[in-house]
Length: 458
Ligand code: GDP
Ligand code: ZN
Image (cartoon, rainbow, N blue to C red; front, top):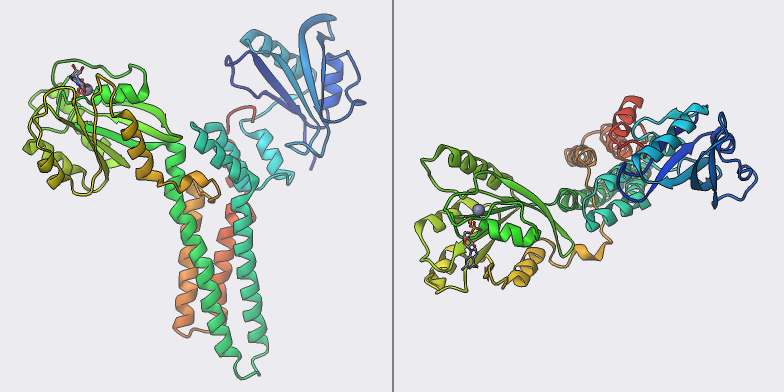
C-alpha cells in the first residue's frame, strides 16, 4: 500500500517539559535530514537517539536543540520509517518544529492515523488498536494495565483460539456430511457439536462477565454519596478526593448540585457523586439537586450511605436504604467524635448484610476501613491478579453477545435435530462475529470511524 508521510505532535500539548513530534512514512528520513543537518539519519543504526540542532533550511537559522529518535521500518509501531523529534514542551517551540516538518513535505496526521497505519500494516489487530485508544483515555493505573494487557493481544489470542475451535468443529461436521455412510457418524457429530459448542459458549460468557469490571476500570465505579442533609456527604467526598471541590457548610441542604470527582482508592477508580440528599423538599433550587440525586442513585454502581451517629436513626434513613437496595451499599456512620445517639442495632436491622463503617470525618478516623470496604466490595482480591482478560469495549461486548446468541441457536438446532448444514450456518456466523472483534471481516467505514476517535498524534 502506497502511503504518504504523516506527522503530528504526539504528546499532550502544553503538558510536560518535553514534547515529541512524530513523523511516519517513506519520506521520514529525507525530511528529517533536511532539517537536522547534524548527521545523516538514514545511515545511523535503527532505534538510536541523536542530539543536535534543528535548522530551517530556507534561512539556515537554528530553530532549536533537539533529540531525534530514529526507528527504521519494519520494527516500528506503524511498520514504516519513524522519526521522533523531542523538543521543548512549550506551544511555540513545538509548533515551529511541526510547521517546519509540514513545510518539508509531510502531511498533518488525522486523529488516530498512526494507529490506523499500525493496524493496516498488520502490526496490531483491531482489538489492540482499540486498546491503544483506551490507553490514551484511561484515567487510572488499573485501567492502564488492563489496556496494556489487551494491547499485548490477550483478548485477541483468546478470540483466535475460540475461532479455531469453531472452525475445527465446522470441518468435522463437513466431513461427516460428506461421508454419511458410517453408521454412528450422526450420533458422534451431535455429541461433539454440543460439547465443543458449549465449551466455546462458556468462554464467551466468561468474557462477558468480566466486561462489567472492565467498564468499571475504565470509567470508574460510579459511586453516589447519599444521606440526609448535614450528615457529612460533602466532607466525605472531600476527604476521599483530598481536595475541596464540593461546598461544605453548616446549613442543611447546601449541596445544590451534583458534584463529580475522580479518585483512586487502592488502585480502584471511583467516580464519586455527591448529591443533595434524597428527601422531599419545597425548595426549588434544592429540588433540582434532589432529582439529580435520584438519577445519580439509579446510575450508581456503589452507594455510600451516610448516617449521622450524633442523631437517632430515622425513617428517612431507613427510606434511603430502601431506595438504594438494588445496589452495592456501604453504610457510613459519621460523627463518631460526637455523642452517639444512633442505635446500632436499629441500623443493622435495616442494613442487613451491608458493611457498616464508623467514621469521624473531622478527625479523619475510619477512612482506612472505609477504603478497605470499598476495595473489597468490588474486587474481593480477584482483580488484583491482573491475569484476567478484560473486555472493556462496547463494540466487543455487543459482538460477544451476538456471538453467544448465534452459538445458542446452533446448539438449539442440534437439540431440535435440525439438519447439520443449518447448524453449520449458525456456527459460521459465530465465527464471523468473533472475527469482527479482532478486525477480520471489518469494513473500511468501521475502521475509519474507530480510528477517528483517537487523539491527534496517536
Ligand atoms: P452534607 O450536607 O451531608 O454534605 O454534610 P457536610 O459535609 O456539608 O457536613 C455538614 C457539617 O457537619 C459540617 O459543618 C461538617 O464540618 C460537619 N461534619 C462532617 N463530618 C463530621 C464529623 O465527623 N464530626 C463532626 N463533629 N462534624 C462533622
Ligand atoms: Zn453536602
